[in-house]
Image (cartoon, rainbow, N blue to C red; front, top):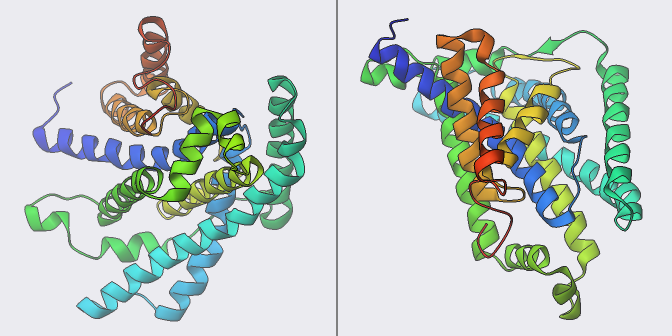
Amino acid sequence: MAVTPTAALVQTLNGIQFGFILFMIASGLTVILGILDVLNLAHGELFSLGAYTAIGVFGFLIGIVGPPGGGVVSTAVFILAVLAAVLVTAAILLPVGTLFEAVFLRQIYDRDQVYQLVLTFALLLILLDVKKFIWGDSSIRTDAVYSAINTIPTSELVGLNYPTYNVFVIFVGTAVVAGLFWFFERTKTGRIIRATAIDREMATAIGVSTDRVFTLVFALGAFLAGFAGAMAVPPTAATLEMGTNPLVLSFVVIVIGGLGSLRGAFVGALLVGVIRSWMITLYPPGEIAAPFAIMALILLVKPEGLFGTWGETA
């Protein structure tokens, strides 16, 4: 199958855009796994809950500022309103993550991991029914954000026909990546979290409250899942099943990158995103199989993942 250079560039950009969404989901999952040693099966439903919540938040804030009128000021206001809606959505997920950790998970940290898997699977089913109770069985969507941002010329300026919203996701995703690495490497709270991940007993001995760290980490994971859901929903619809595929691909990402490694999650997410995008063009039936084939290869030749587990660097 012949692929033109322009089509190759578009598919690569699509893969990078999806990779950034995947990183936002997988980063929360891998940080929780690296520090709490909990494989959170409900993480995909937190992503889905973020998508459903974002539709209401988008509608409220966009209703206040209105669509971009074509001027620089109105365009900037609209972009800021969209970013504010994404942040508000993610912030709404913070108490959900805090509640899950404090009420449910904290009680079973000392038990076998099977209990954690069963509990997080139960939370997955509870969230699924909560969404069904609030929003019903039908899919819902918001077209206003996607269509309005796509009226802003970006890639057309360099002669490429590519959705501006995807460019927006890549820029925001880059900022999220930079912000997370800055948080874990430069801030006191981030260094405390890393120290707790490296040696939990030593962190406790020097006065670190592991209970607070665990709650903070789980809330951060929920925040990132909600952020990803809000960024993912404008081009598509929110459905009850939308959390499943991202959760499965996030497992692939953290196995490829290394269990608990933020850097590995970033590289793994981009790798999975680009491979998936190229398979959609070259051989659509291999869209799901290709990332799993890469994961199987990594498990055979480098079982600890490309970047190992959480260590001295994120």
